[in-house]
Image 1 (cartoon, rainbow, N blue to C red):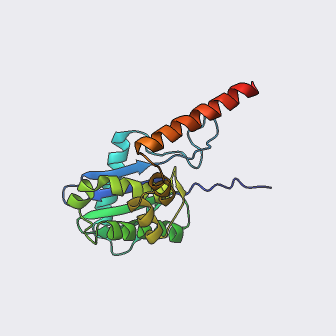
Image 2 (image 1 turned 135 degrees about the vertical axis):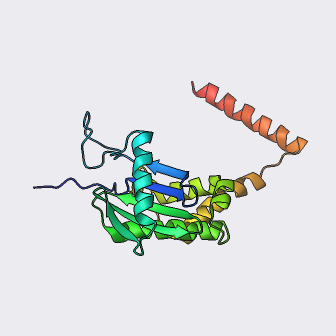
Image 3 (image 1 turned 30 degrees about the vertical axis):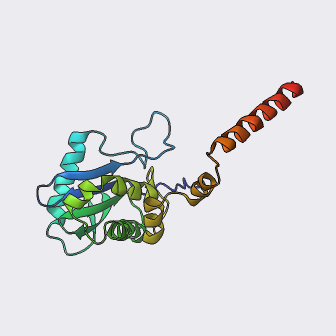
Length: 196
């Protein structure tokens, strides 16, 4: 009998300040291909409202503040975490492989260390929120793990695509170049009109 196989493995990614317990970034995911009309399927978001999310985060932070391990089972979910400066990085999964989830939290930690030059604290994360958000988007998409190599993640976040830059360098923006583009466009339009 075939089992329901899915790439969906991350229920949430949380970055919370340990000083004032504020949310820096939280993303909760639901399985992208859930059965229609079902709210209790395996990939369903167990915390659909902000009130439930904040209660979960508060309890999680209280439980992990004094932990020495990096993996816990909280509220029936596998949670892996790392403390960096004054922030906690959490990756929450259902009943997934904790080694895979731990690879995600390490990829996030190391990619942020590369991007922020080893200054991963609340102030730096808020100032570089764009890099933080892009890094998470490169690692996880809708609860599916895409990349766990921090060097690749950091390079995708910090550099523009090279194929676009090379095509921009070859454009002649002088008056003669614009006239050539105009003539080329007129010629192509005339050819297209003759085909109709």
